[in-house]
Image (cartoon, rainbow over all chains, first blue to last red; front, top):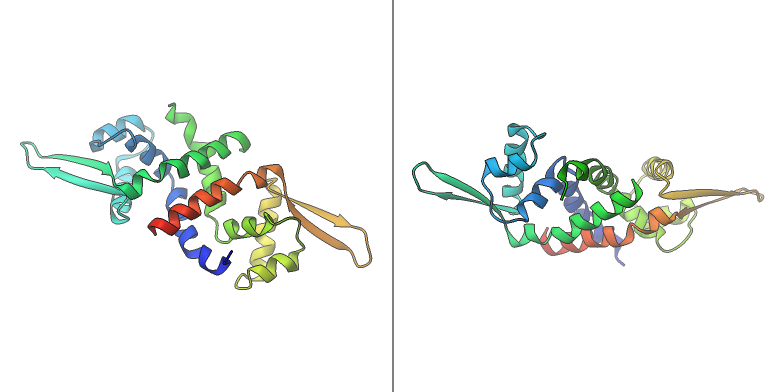
Length: 102
Length: 102
């Protein structure tokens, strides 16, 4: 095991997963493409501003893809990318350890 | 899925895993009981103070157990508890996602 190469990538991943609400937002989005309002409805305790910030971060990390449908009124949908969908087992393993031990 | 109960335990777990060096320290300790100096040798870039702080946190979380052997000179060993050992698949899943995607 080469420990020297473990750190940056592990820590970058753990940083993302450790941000407040991120695990929950990704879990909600595993259910398929969602509009902002639909995500919000499933996590009512989270503020609009917080969800906006998190979605921007997740988009900049290519974990979430944002699609604008040029309808009237415009429809915007958020969807997990393959990178985002592959977080499912990671989040589940954190969740399952947390439920057992915390 | 009851999202309202997911948050605190997931976030407490993700908090621990997201602290700088913690993933690496636990990985080194998966190799069996270690003295401070032995952990330090495997992670030379980490300062003594940082390792001391992290070990105290991990001990207070019951992830690490500290045993003092009353020899001359005193020998102190750190060992993962069952709670700590069960972090192995969690850390591996974060690491594997990070290596692939970050």
